Length: 112
Length: 114
Image (cartoon, rainbow over all chains, first blue to last red; front, side, top):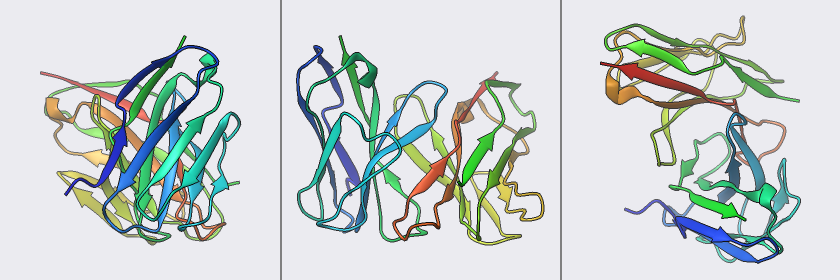
């Protein structure tokens, strides 16, 4: 039972390059989330998808786009990467509101 | 808006010491409260949760009680082990939207020395 799978695990980009982070869950959850984790700042929500076909901005959406491709997959795209986007990115999913979220192992992204 | 505040870290303890990590929250309504743990190089895992006032969540020797009167959800363990070294996050469910969003504290790093 894989749970939430993120790819890639590590990536180095140059400023201005684009990249898509992939996330897939096999638990038939309706809701999916993208967070970034920076030292001393906890987790900040970038975008979320409450259900298939919907996406909404979180706390820090600037510089990112998302696609809820189907119920299983929720991707995060950086169109023009900036050094300020160097971070660890986590994808999560949950069955419904008030249920706990399941997290992937993260993608460590460095932008030079 | 809703928020979660955790005690500053890192917290350094010797093995078998008693652990308390403080968490207080601000919220309208009655959110569910969670503790997540993140081991080095891994994602977050749910440690325990409580869904209403006076509920006690427990798992792996850790406990936390949902205290509405003090708006707190402090994490405790009677005897920590080296393997408990990790980052601990307190979180609450965002009831302003029916989307399952969580609001996280900034995390507290625990280091347990043998």
